[in-house]
Length: 126
Image (cartoon, rainbow, N blue to C red; front, top):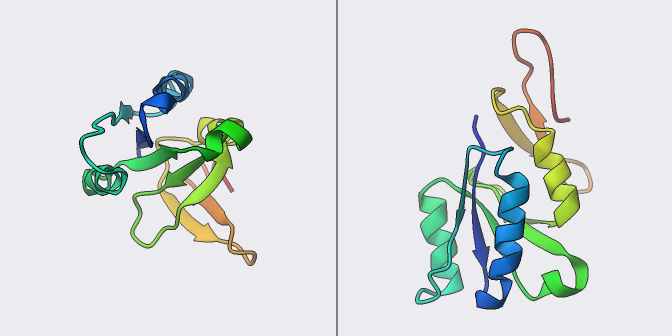
């Protein structure tokens, strides 16, 4: 499974942040796209990228105070999760793009990405 992300800043004041995140993950993921079509509503832009099977990173006013981004995975039934931007980059940098990925939640209802082991029984993210 290859990772691909659409970064959606809520307004133009977060475009520089979006490009900064893109530059940090561009060598990790297969495809990174920044949606700056502000003629469409924020929700419409999110739905448009979901239809294209992109995982979605949204950047809103919360970023200024906490440096948190919201990530919505394209898997059906997955929930949006907030990550500190550095925590998220560490998470995806440890991801092996060649392994099959499954998503679960633990007993505290926190999002966990787990990977099925490949032929060498190497599991990357637990």
